[in-house]
Image (tube, rainbow, N blue to C red; front, side):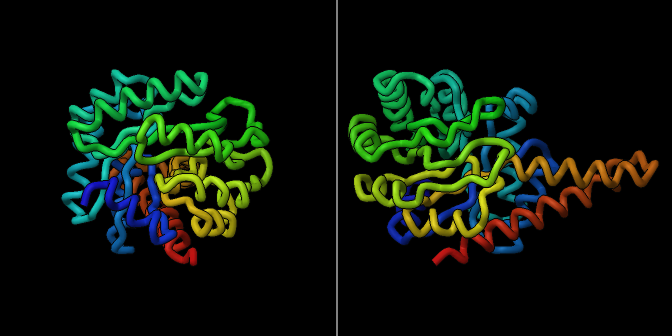
Length: 274
């Protein structure tokens, strides 16, 4: 099943799937082990920074081989693609899904760029995600009072034909300075004007009860990044502070296990939303 069909199926059923960023072999391994143990599909996400770090072919190859080795149903997605050129490189490399993020441009410019990517992705039969509204990125002011409006969503999706849309309903990327409050009633209003897949970015740090409410109200893709790299690094630092071991093959496994536990709990929580 391609990702468009999977997301449409989840949207119709008021269910969601976890989309997790990985950064290296170890974080990927933790995600794979969790998906395997939970017997659940997963979307593997690569940001432009990780692609630059690992190299596109290496990053995509790790994801593909990971899914194959663990026998998991999964898809590879470009997270926050900043240019059409990067999107094309990822599509040529066989990505199942790409996100073009022109959300910081004007509405018309966002529509133009997104439409270009939608047309480009057609021959690859790839899923296309865009973003509408202000979902603060790392280092940006977490002004969660700027929300995506239903009338904008209706017009944007009709003009672009995009498959999935990340919306601003109170979340932000990175660590939260205070507990976020998702605008569930606004989300319900957005859900009423479109049948496209709605995506929640900035899933790290949002209370479980709010994520469940968001799924019930129409979110079908939950992005997770910050918590994954955070738990890996915290665990690794704790281990290194207690040992002089230099064999990374003995040091890394506990950090991988921590990622596995995190992802397993996230999948369990998402699946419990009713």
